[in-house]
Image (tube, rainbow, N blue to C red; front, side, top):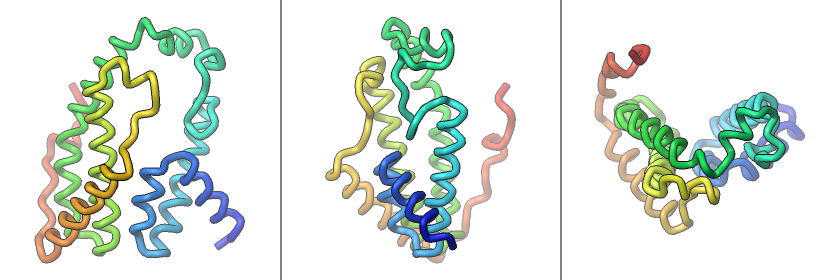
Length: 176
């Protein structure tokens, strides 16, 4: 694999998402390389589409008037309501993801279970903070990450020898 490209991807994930970078370290080397390459590609595509760099842009640099209007603090309560609904909509998907852990190699199950906990925790914080969540980047502390790492370890280990749950059909339907 192209070593400079892998180094660029590793730097991108470290700068773009410390949570994702932490979880990626739990994968075996080959899977980690693939995960960081995928992250870097998705980050690049997202940034190109949104005219951002590593997911950030200033409101005054928003590419169109609709984006500038949404960035206006007066709209934060409405955005918080939308975010809360999206976070609630994600809950059944978070639950179903754990059912797939038995089908993964142990290190991958560990990484996925840990990332699951970290990203769910961030969502819960965004929901709890409401409109204030737009005042700063919402994240998990080192202590919280360590707790979620331990929880991910427990989930990955307890998934060994279990059968993967069938996926609920309602999760794979177009919303009404």
